[in-house]
Length: 530
Image (cartoon, rainbow, N blue to C red; front, side):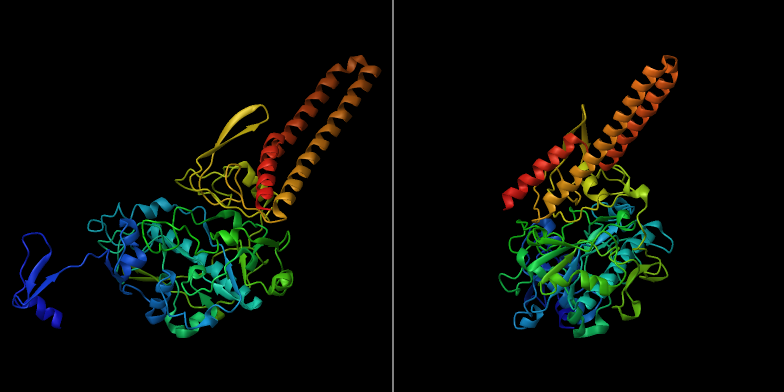
């Protein structure tokens, strides 16, 4: 009310352009503060305007959020600005579980980008309505992530661990009224890493929320005790890829997850997130085996050796078990998308599939298939899996831990006698020939051994076929010269078989020259790290 009085009593404009004018009968000077320096909840947490404009903010106000006090605190924690945990050591004393979230590979991210900054023309764009394709894709992408969260929560409870939330990847903004994709007038780029309260209903649980969950940026909580987040205190859990996994991809690396701290012109990377933290990437790996497990009891038994390790990180929770272990009645209620014309939409997971078995056709796909291989974008991107990644995927090599170099543009490799260039994107992959690789103590050696074994087996099969056929040819020539036509037919059959073997090798992404490069790279980096 007093602010209204200040404005109404003698408020004058400032024709000099300073943005400052007299108010309250000339007794005070009034002015509008720059929103990137004195932030509301949308400009700071959702748009991340100070980072985009490379300015250091003075203040933030936890507005424009949807889940009361728990939602406000979680947002500030996500930004690593909450100091309220420094007097509660129990917040850091438990053992924790995290996982790498995956998103559907066939979602067209460019369709979201067209609705966001700098393409936004909200004044001329009608609000979203029921049935809009872009709204359906947003719902499908978010619901898939929620289903993963449900499975992860069930696993964490079984293991007696507190779950570190994943960052959520949203295609559309959340607003209290019908909108065209973003808050009107904002500079929000789509898609984006959205606050958890855009997706989760935290308020009904109050303080109990932090009994089961930690913010996705927990590793960089300002009150985290020193020396806790180390590779020795962490283990990565490799999971055999199933058919559902092969239809997904990592959240593209160009979407930053961690809020920048200190000088906003300096980027510390995404160390706050387990999936991108260097200590976690360098941690030793444990495997759940070559097939999905039947029950949560089986999962606990498989991980009994790391029961006392502080952090365990699942490389995916898709297909950990053969069927869903999550009971939705025991899960944290999810939020809503708001709003389209007429109403809002509840997030539902009934039709999300995480347990589809991989088909032989999926496992035999060559590199570069954007629709059915996991770590590639399906639409409007240049993402392609390189041959080394195909080797690891096809052979279920999940013990290798690697970092991705964002500025890699391409890699040249010799295949047989032909020179070819395979374009490679900066999407997250298992390993690349020209990137820096951090290898667990067993990963590199075992990967090379298995790959070498596959090539040797193929060569033995090929040589055996050739030897048999040559013997047949000699016998035929000795016995009957008039069977030349039959011999030619036999030679053609052998040639076809040889060609088939070569094609199979190409599908695996393995040949001698390539294997040599992989071997040198992996073993070289393995020696460097030891």
